Length: 322
Image 1 (tube, one colour):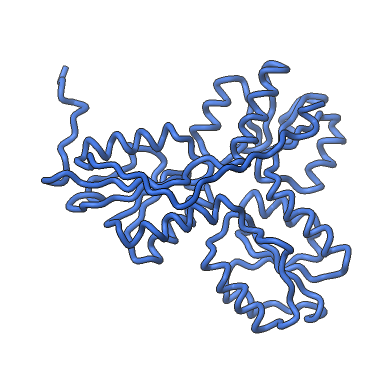
Image 2: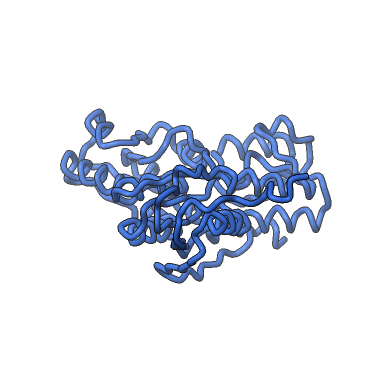
């Protein structure tokens, strides 16, 4: 046995600095969704069915699966009359109807900030507005939101898409957004929307959630001080991908990694200061493993860089309280 098999050679000749950003990792909506699954498992025992990934992180999903959660793509996989939990990303009315038709007991773990956007869609559709929804068409959150009023919504993802819009009444138009978008990209899209449609209105409050904003602002603050930034998060995590884009937009090399083993030495070789953050669905255990590996690679000076303190909590779903 090679006793040195787990020893890594440092990639910097002197001690490097690791800039560990805060806030990072789990947001209130993710904590709530995970807690919902754990509490239902505790109260009812396994198996408990969950439609799609409860949050976009494979580590979290696998951990809950080991405790008895069964993740399904479609409700057809759930036995009639069983409990089903809806993920933090939300679902369309059609999914709820299907669940009722199968006599499933629904527990809704949708993030309240996603629900807020759903309610805005319902309101503006009733008021006969054309709803311009800014987001990524294939993301679970957008699929659910689109389902609230598909005939009233025109979905766009870029400034170029704005040019294709032809609302029936340019004076009755509103824009809403996915909760996990890039602040800068969204601002550019909204700016062009306002140029083309001066009468357009926006949501009563920012749709991009507080956690997405805070993590992006932290990256913006650290990027000029770092040689590279590592974002710990899943490939299908929208907010994690946006953090990479924000760093690169600031002119700093950035990489999305699922865990510590994904770090390539050439990403940090010769660098003196490495920033680390994590998407809103990334557990802290994965961040700590990344920190430990970077320490072994020579980044032994760890500085916590706090942008803002988060203290947000969401109440549990009414169905769970009952």
